[in-house]
Image (cartoon, rainbow, N blue to C red; front, side, top):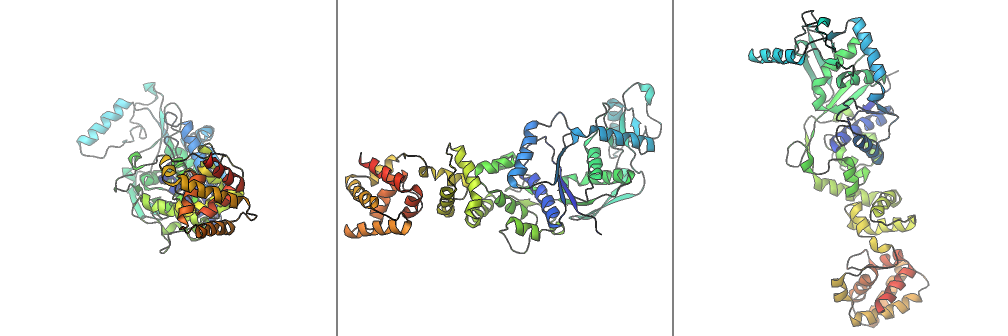
Length: 465
């Protein structure tokens, strides 16, 4: 039987989870789901000085908002220090690691000499070969991995193909600091081995770490996973993505009103394609995604395309599935409604004219509460004496309406317009201003249905006062 696929997303909480990290998470999640495997969430928080609780919170909340559910975890490396120390002790005993007593000044002098000789700066293995200061120095030692000194390590990367590294160019990596704390590259190796990770999908900035990690895995008697190093995402200007290009945290996209499905759909197409298909549901992404189809070249962010896809998802997603997201945005405006039928109706009425959920929420304020704030310019233009008289007559007819539906309301408006020899807009626009406060809303008959009879009639009566 083939080995079940196990992927992992392992962000470092030294900064906010951004869309580059989200795309890596998405690719790893999709492959695990496509292969009916296991997806692990692991927080690599060994950098105690730079890791922050806020960044950890964004990772956990961001993954939950995106719906990238994990099967195991979240695991935290800071909670596994005893395990790392155990493995280091075993490696020292097996001779695959050794103590290094060199001081910072000695290392700096060594690198300066190498640079003067136009050599690549690297640790020369003096303590490995018994030529270093040794325990007599009285210094607390670091622990280094004994990397092979001959031959080459070939990374058979799914995206980049075979990438060869000469082992003599890879110095002996520090795997434990002088205070005993393990280092990032070592913790990654132990975690991947212990958790049975079969496929590592990550940014190509990690490619240079991979040969060292592979050699450590082999020293531990483990088979290295399959690696796929994904090209970076660039800003719209072609430069490396940075804060000046917009949202820093993935949760800022939630704030801006993106549906999680739309953001994932956009990100999956940055570096991966499936024919000419642009719009994907979550299930379609799972069915189509293959790690072997990831592109080698970097992709540039296109905010306009992202907005377009967001509207496509607003229009095509079942209204009931949009309601929780709309409710969240309304809550940020101080509007709280548990009326699912009303919210579904608002989604249906507003989705063609809204690019984001934030825009939809802001443009739907008038559906809630007993009162409405009139736009002064709109009121001046559309609520003169003649218009108020028309609206008064309209209110009387609407009060008698037995069937409060869009067709019935529309029939009342058309009948009044015909009697008065007016275009329908001459009644509909004053009515719109009276009940919504402004000149823009969904079709007026649909708007009145959503407002309901009581709220509509009360707002019309208030215009006369």
